[in-house]
Amino acid sequence: MISFAGKSVLVTGASSGIGEAIARRFAGLGANLLLTARRNLSPADIAARYPAAGGAVHYLSADVTHKEAADRLVAHAVELFGGLDVLVNNAGILFRGTAMECTDAEWTATLETNVTSVFRLSRAALRVMTAKKSGAIVNIASDWGLVGARGAAAYGASKGAVVQLTRSMALDHAAEGIRINAVCPGDTDTRMLDGAMSGLPRAELLRTLGEAIPLGRVGRPAEVADAVCFLASDQSSFITGVMLAVDGGNSAG
Image 1 (cartoon, rainbow, N blue to C red):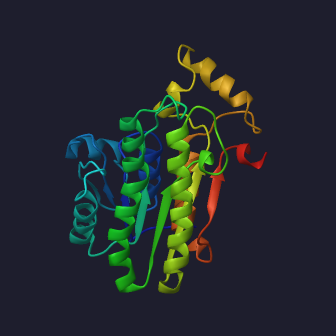
Image 2: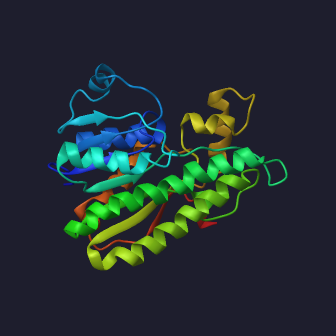
């Protein structure tokens, strides 16, 4: 059975959607958690969200696109827990549009959030993990980082960059006992999905998108969270540099 009792975990983009599901799964497995997102959540909010957490749960509001955020978050985790065992880079944004439709501002925001923050947080975490020769980083990429997609040029480019960054870091730090993998979700029932087909009622949106997926439905955030926890756990101790698609079979075709 997977357990993170006594382990410290930092999760970005943790206030909703896939990030919140990841946080809930780690909490249920006993991890000491530092959660972050741009939203302000009070200690009472956190206590209400994680009433049965097996370890301590802390929250620190931060914008991961700010240059100093990565070092501040990792330092806070070390201060709270004495180290950092797992980093989950989940924070991300999505602008719809082709290359011709994408503005410079949208392109820059997408790369800063989806790629640069992953690089900076991983770098900060690696400084801690290499000192003790152990640790795991799980990046949230996308099946659109594995295959092409229409109407999401900036997002696809950013997730493709996360895929390659994951592979490079995995090779660079394997000898130091640090495993670095990525989970690549397909369409998942979160608010980010709402812009896929504007104007459709949500139930119809989910049904329509699900019809195009080999398994016949969109994914659930908890299913992505299970994959993340597996890759972060000792049960995947011989796995590094892997892009695990959690997409109902989309990227198989």
